[in-house]
Amino acid sequence: MSRAGVFWILVLSVVLFVVFPYRVRTGVGLVPEWGGGEGGDVGGVVWVYGGPGVVGAVGEEGWREVRGEGVVGGRWGVVAREGDGWVVRGWDGRVQGRLPDRGVPFVKDDRLFMVGRFGRRVWEWGTDGRERGMWVHAGMLTALDVRGGVMASGEVGGRVVVRGRGGEGVWEGGGVVYGVALSPNLSLCAAVVGLHPQQVVLLGIDGGLEERMRFVLDSSFRRPVFLSFLSDTLLGVESAQGFLLVDLRTRAIWTLPLSSPRLTAALGADLHLVDHGDGPGRMLSFISSLTHAVLFSLPLPPPAFSGSEGRRVFLRHPGGVFSLSLEDDV
Image 1 (cartoon, rainbow, N blue to C red):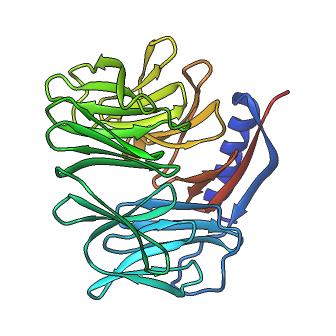
Image 2: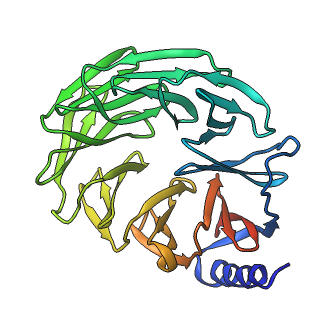
């Protein structure tokens, strides 16, 4: 094992056992790097990392990574541009299906979609390359989220459209919709709307997109602003200027001092990971949904955070990939 690997094992062990109020159940295991383009079947793939043109997964045989133009991925494999179209490959490298070049593919809710070049059509594809559905929007899409068979979209002109659950709801607020997010229980749709200042609107899905709550973002929150539900009652608002937590029950708002935040994973309903900062100052912070505070932060050499599955966290470092299993103290 390299000196860098030993160093990071010591650092993570001290932090997890001394500082963090959670404990490692199965210890720290070092998974070797994998950097080739071939290999056998990867069973038990637990996570896929999606970045700008980068997809990777941690499995029983280690870390696998694919780079290229427009690469996206899910638990079933990787989609990458090849020739005049897109090819779906499993993590064993075998071709599962081919997609026509109608636009840019992306993954939501572990399902494969493609937005047309004019921004009004959305297709869903099976990993075998067969079309599963198509949705046509009245205006050009500006935001999209999919969860549990429900699709929420934002359109130019300030329209929010939610499809699913046997019907369609439309909310019109004017301006531009910069982001949408569906709550885990599919009862709410959050949207970022407006220009100066930007506002976050909470819409009830079952009530035909009835407005439930609205609050104005501080002028320091500039576009792009991203929304994500940490739980059914806790909303995260991210921008390069900061990170907000909004308690939808009490309407209380907390600002966390995190620059360039990226909400990366939920380790159950009470613990969340936020990757923030850039370059040498990049950190991975553990946030409690109960106290609305940062429990502690780890300095990480990029690209350090790889992903999570349940209460298990994967951290990359120069020596390989750490697999950490976290358990509540009792």
